Each structure stands twice: as structure tokens, then as C-alpha cells.
Image (cartoon, rainbow, N blue to C red):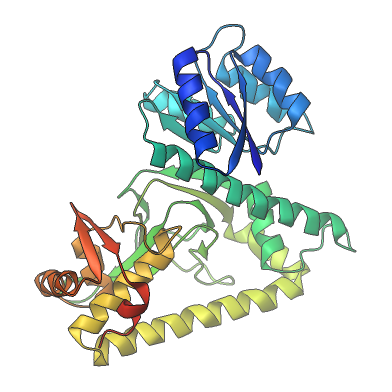
Length: 349
């Protein structure tokens, strides 16, 4: 059972949140009434994750995070801010200090539990990478793609994007290659008729943005954040130097590029030969795989983007979605779509 340290000076909110987390059945909760006590308990208990208010007596949340990040034993503990401060500057300050997430009050039970689950999963992945690096026989050697992604985390520049923000546009100079650390990104390209076709989707832990490593080639498509997204970017010139010294990683990167080409070919075949109904079902499954932690979670994506990936008109997609709803395979929740039967959706013809 994972241990959560909850630092909150509001007694009622602290007790209610503690009860909510413990009733989930997955967490043991330790609480602290202010930042100073929270810092002491963090060092005493070494929790798996910390949820912390910002405005508190004794020591505010920013001070807690800064102190923890300077301690070798606590610097890698996932940290989530919980605050009524919703100004963009406040959020950016917290993220710049190294917070993993930022939840504004009032919040829902689902928002809090999903944030904690996601941060714990990411922390586990990063911990495995750190252990792999420690075990490496040659100091500084990158042995596989996991090591390369860890290199991105340790040395890259962090970029934050809101939903629908443009990461780069077709024709821009391809200075950076990116690793998605939070959220999701779609890449698209305009055809001669001005129709926007989504060419690929990238989720957390995916690499994208690579064109030519040896030539100064511009980006061949436009990349847009489809939710609140965090990226880590490495300059192409720097990555090229790393690849020159780590041939094992080059081979794995070639395999990744090969898999990407295979996915594009399969998408083109589907667009050419599959029925509209099957295209719609396959696209829903693709988005669920790329942007959801669980396939059955609601898909928060526009009908236009779904149609773009499926390669059909938006009006045609909407009719097909209605048919899938009548068959009981999906549910419509406002602008969101929820998959009710994954296996049946895979068998749609």
C-alpha cells in the first residue's frame, strides 16, 4: 500500500481528503497541519507521494517543495500542489520549482485520484530508469531507449502547452526532438485541397519531432497539444552527438522509426479499404490507447480530430458514432465518448 503525505492547514479539508484517499483502499495517509510539520514528516516517513497546499502558516507549499528538492533522500518524491490559487503565474511558479502536478480547489474525487495514480506510475518508471543507469557497466553509456528517455528527462528543456496550443508548424526549423512527459500531441498535415489529415498521435513516454539527423530539414507536419501537455526537448545537434557515442541506442531508434512507418502504412490501408463503421471504431480505439490511462475512460477529443484520423468527413463520422451508440458499444457524455465494450469494438466490420 502506497503512503501519501497530505499537507493542508484547513482542518475540514484535510480530514475530508484523508478520508477520501483512505476509502479508495489503495493508500495509507499521513497528514500535517502546516508546511513546517509537513517537511519534518516527509523526512521521517519518506512517503511515496506528497499532496500539499500552497498558502499555509510556518512554511508555504513553495518552501516545502524547494526544501525537499534540495535533499537527496526526498528530491524524487512526486509532489502535487493542491491550491485555490488559479492564476497562471502561480501555476507556472509551482511547476518551475519541480512540482509534478497542480490541482485547483474545489476538486473532484476523480481528479485527485487520477492525478495521484498518474504521478505514482511516472515515478515508478523514472525510478527504474535511474536504477538501470546506476547498474550500467560503462559510465555515461546509454544502452537502450529507456536510457535515452532518461537522458531527455535529465538534460532536456521543459515546455508547457495548453489544449490546442501549437508545438511547431509545418515548415518550422526542426531544432528540437521531444519526449512527451504529460498529456498528448497530434501531428497533422494539409493536403492540396486544404484538408487537414491527422498523421500520428503521441502519448506520455513517446518521442516525436524527428526529421533528418544529418540535414537541416524543416518539420514536415504540424504538432498540436490535444490536452494540457508537458514536453521535454533536446536540441537535434545535441542528440546527434549522443547517438554517435551510443550505437546500441541508434539501433533501437531505428526499430522505433520502423514501427512508426508500419503504423502509418496500416493507417493508409485502413483508410483505403475499411468500411466507415470499422474506421470509426478503430479510430476510437486508437485514441483510447494514446490518451487514456484506461480504455474505458472518456475520450476527450473533438469530432473533427476523430474524423481526421479516420480519414472520413466529420458528418459521416458523427453518423457512425450514433450507430455505435445504438449498438451499445459506446456512450456519449456531452462532448466526450466512453467505450463500453472494447472487445466488441475491435470486431466491428
